[in-house]
Figure 1: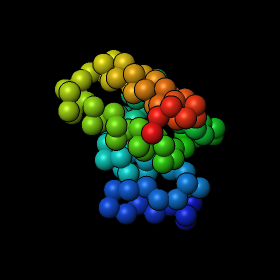
Figure 2 (figure 1 turned 135 degrees about the vertical axis):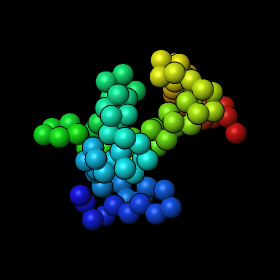
Figure 3 (figure 1 turned 90 degrees about the vertical axis):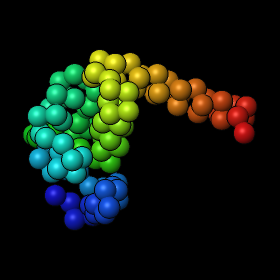
Figure 4 (figure 1 turned 60 degrees about the horizontal axis):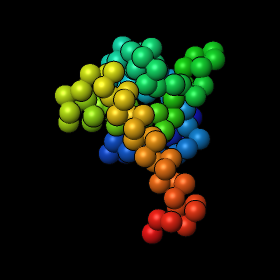
Amino acid sequence: MNTALIIHDGDWLGEAAWLALDDFARACGVEVGYVTLLVDEGLLTPPRAEPQWRFGGEELARVRRIRRLQRDFEASLPSVAVMLDLLDELERLRSALQRAGLEP
């Protein structure tokens, strides 16, 4: 594990750090099987897959978002997938508006 990684009060600090599957699951507060399920369902993609899965801060935030959506809306993983697609599209549209100077 990269020594630049610091997890403090549940927040991810240090963009250069990568976590192996076990450490990543522990940082997310979930079981390894849950992370594997998210990858199998296409909700999470390890940015480094060879020779082993490695995860970073973006994936940690994504798992937290998935868990929050499941909890807040009592949503199944297929429902969460749709919600994430819509949230991602909303972010893309907001960025496009901002680049065009149309959003304050």
